Length: 190
DNA sequence: ATTGGGATCGTCT
DNA sequence: GACGATCCCAATA
Image 1 (cartoon, rainbow, N blue to C red):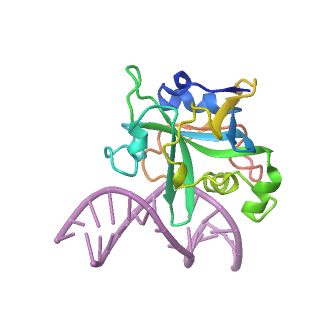
Image 2 (cartoon, protein in one colour):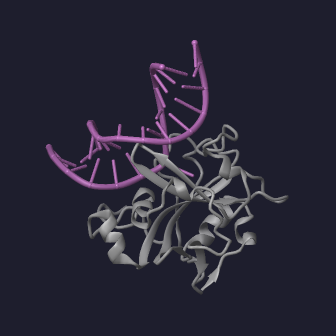
């Protein structure tokens, strides 16, 4: 497996996001295949960076390829990858990793989550399963270290499902969410 | 110093 | 489908 380098991340978030599908998130001895992502840009009303740089979102305005972790709803952490940040792509962009399929360390993930099902199929759930917290905010994914994203040889799917983003009040018009499978898992066809 | 809101999740109906 | 949990941040004063 090859660790993704800076050049992979240093593009606009809506370009990087679908490319992250089927890549492998690694934290220590835990690994998961990325199965759901969302893009957030600088001019995007749903993005934390929309109102400019603050202490909370500062990492978003730094170099690409770093981890942006934030805490929300009093309970959950969410993990993003900073993108853009060069001449061709402005800073203040990120891709939210919303779900992974466990590959390694499933037992440990189940232990952390306290349940067998739905181990890492949501942004808060995967942070709990992988023990990602605010202390990892700003971490460089391109440097040698316990956290990184790797190419396992699988290309991104050409049949990814594209939808509006989840859980936002604004910016619902852009189709910036990509998943490996359909969002609603079966019941109620359309 | 205080206040209000949030890129969610699990439980219950 | 609805709601409560519950903490961190940012904005105000």
